Image 1 (cartoon, rainbow, N blue to C red):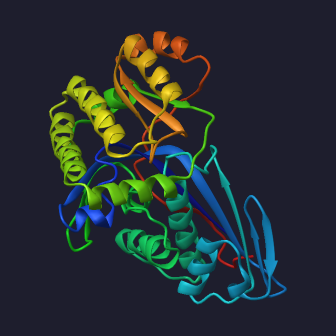
Image 2 (cartoon, rainbow, N blue to C red):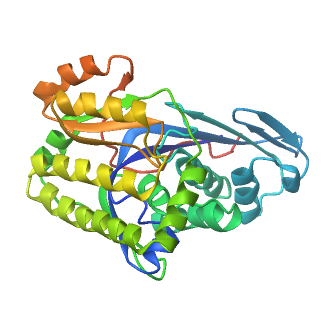
Length: 330
């Protein structure tokens, strides 16, 4: 039996610039961190030779092509695993529509476990890029590339998306005390709402492709990612919060449907209670809220948002890893 452990992620600024319609014209960039909420994938040999997959549903088939779960189907095909395998998955928090990159964490973790099952080693970069290929090229998901790299690499990173599709992961070089202060300033709340990231990302991609004004807004978000990187390196965390707020305003302008009256009300309550800035994770319109605030204001913010579930998080530094590997795969 093999078990992989893969972190989810939070992006601070620049999300959406990892979509091809943007970065093929203007290079994208995000500031992103992996967090200590995980996707676990368990893989083991199955004596009968067929395939069993357990997620929100259970599938048992005798042929890869009969698998309904697209990520599992394409991953097994890519690694030439025809059968004799059982795959199960669990997550620390609700994964579907969360905005924390859960589908990419699932794909990265699944591939990591399957490579171990095949007794093959691959680099972190190869793992992330293979996950991108599975999700974007094979499954035709209208998503970008940041989630796969954040999940594979872990850590607090400045991730760049080149015109040719190459992704560059640069760990943000700062003191440990700065990381600690940034972690302490983060507040995360679950809205209790989920949404289809694909639908919102399709709209965003089309808006950027069709509107020069909205492309310019996205370029502003990328510039803010560059500035935020420098602010973190210089321990200027107050400015990081302001950039987060400015990024959220731009994000709402680029794609209608990212926010609504209720989301705006929650956001304004947090700002009035002392948050520097915040955003909804991922494509928006549900999932998880993240705010940055002086820790002295945390209680008042939590009181104002008492109808939301508070989630305590810290940063993950290791990325996807194999945490158990029985040599016999038994």
